[in-house]
Image 1 (tube, rainbow over the protein chains, first blue to last red):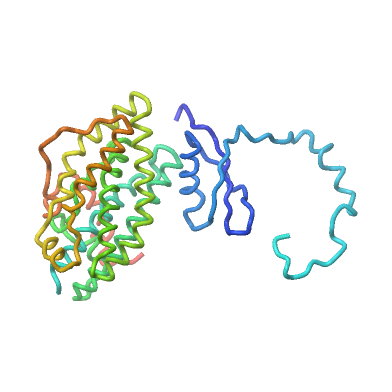
Image 2 (cartoon, chains in turn red, green):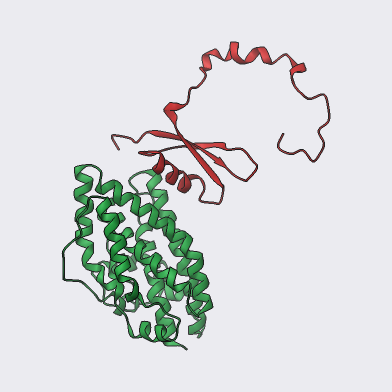
Length: 94
Length: 250
């Protein structure tokens, strides 16, 4: 195809109670087609109960070049992690 | 053996087998990755339905018949599918037009078959309705996109509708087996929903800015096993493995 359809990002909720997760991307002419394509490409083996699609160009991404200033300062501050108490077994998906 | 019931089941199941095979030919050859997967998904839905019908038919036939015998070891004249579903994949317009003209019919048929006195057929119909509702949604969307798209897509899908229209009257023909099964409350009287079919097809075609063909001459014969020249080639592909290595198992 010389003229590709726009790219879409696909988010699928695999079970009620879980959040939507990024599953991948695909091409489609519009949102409706993106949903149908996502259904066929990503949920054909019973992977989902809900699908979101968003056109990739609408996602603003951080620049990997800025990773140092964005993320590294967080690495040496273990006191910011809530790891100093025990989680009860009943709490799932934390 | 209840020959009428057996033939009646094949009359429905063969459509799913042959259309499934046609769509399967697109595996790896679809116009885009997404559409390729969509078409093969539909193909697999149809094969799943075919298996349920053939397993039931094999039980009726006895004599040690299996679903594979029915699928792979009949001769061309013994397949009772509609001529519509054996038509080749000329272009994507043809593929979607064939799918759409069949899907509208298929859904109406299954919605009636769900009320059959035969519990097995009713159960297969009930399960298939969800699948076929999606097939119809997919093909209707594409008819609208292509018809109301650019000049070339409009032209191509109009050509496809025009050339396939001649096979649509056969959807409502009845064989002897059909008639006996209707009387017994097992079979579906397809003539009852012919008007509904035309109304539904017309509504989508109009929305797609396509013209309803004015052909008054229609092809028939598939239900009696008299097929177009395309079926033989399809079957030689479909049956190759079983014919070359008899009784082979996967």
